[in-house]
Length: 217
Image 1 (tube, helix red, strand yellow):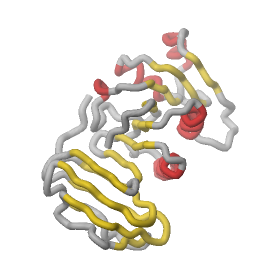
Image 2 (cartoon, rainbow, N blue to C red):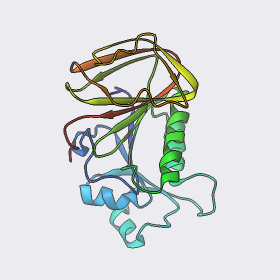
Image 3 (cartoon, rainbow, N blue to C red):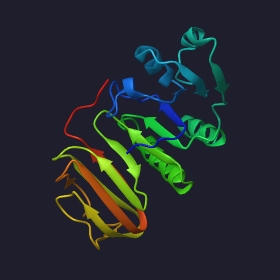
Image 4 (tube, rainbow, N blue to C red):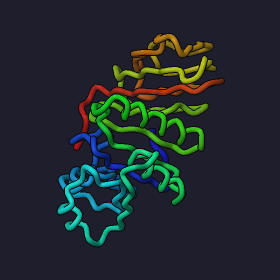
């Protein structure tokens, strides 16, 4: 899933050592979200912005990035640091946002990032979460995805139900399929070809893409 628009890459506190797309392939602006600055330094990336309440960030590390814009927020706040960074991206007009997070930290924080992703989806912003082995995003009415035969794609309904119009390239076709929030029927579909396409009719569907290859640096 790629979007040729103004891009922002959020390196969060739980950014993995490697991501599916590869850090070396970042082609947009890098944002360090709180302690994600440690990963930024280790990866030798050049951040455009450092943002957060800095409750888990070594202050001496900030001294290494004196020329970078800093947005410091109070610890007592309604938003998570990731949500603050996303709000900034929205205000700045970014239309393609990647959140680098291993989704292995606190479960409530992982769920909150999915909520953030849903908010971006509803605003028409192309966004995804990248971990070491998976990409997570919401389907649009027409979604095309490049991969390899044998890659896995799981689809989860958000809301009461979702209905598909058609699909191509998947081992288990989605033509006319309905998914419901209380069922797990959409788990572990398989790429039968290197490119798949999905036509969604109604509803909101979270997609979890798991390529066979391991994450890239």
